[in-house]
Amino acid sequence: MVRIACLLIGYVFGMFQTGYLYGKMHGIDIRLHGSGNPGMTNALRVLGKKAGAIVFLGDVLKVVLACLLVTFLFNEGRFYEGDSLLWMLYAGFGSVLGHNYPFFLHFKGGKGIAVTAGMVLVLDWRLTIAGLIGFVIIVAITRYVSAGSLVLIGVFLAGWIVLGQTGHLSLTTVRLPESYGIVFLWAALAFWRHRSNLVRLKDGTENKLGSKKKE
Picture 1: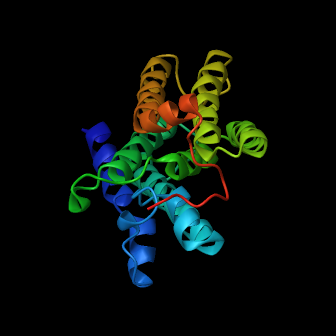
Picture 2 (picture 1 turned 120 degrees about the vertical axis):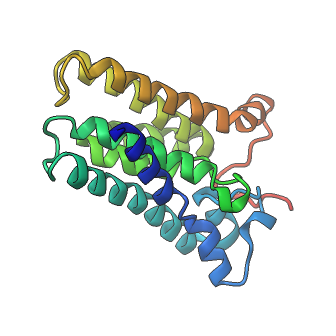
């Protein structure tokens, strides 16, 4: 029941569509511009750097708040002790589901990368640094945000397993396989949501950072 509760709490927080709401505040339905995605990358492309930064921070904040809430509710506010990491993983995955598939927008949301970045930030500083370095290097070289985003996801998955197998996560050996399963599903969902980007990357037609996507 705790797992389901964490997923539901995360989903509710994840449904707060920062990009969509920010666009509405400025008289724009972001779903009708650029890629049609209400996430951070499209907000950056359509509304500018300030909008991109605000949307990114909003999407990071919602998963942080979800993690704080489930920790206080189900782990007595004790962070990185007991099962807190597991409950936060469930809340984070729920947040991604809420962000990607918000029911009030007919289940058409973002791709969950900013939410994932927020989750990595909460979970482990080492994963945060490694993921950030990987993202920045790939985007700086290729100017493909999608490629950098998928590298971030890959670092999250590989890094989590390495930390778990080397005893650097505050989870019991009984909980570790479950946590691996959640992170694997998380990564699989991210690649699924980026399937069209992968096709465009293969064909060389993916939009680069700083370019304007045709309407």
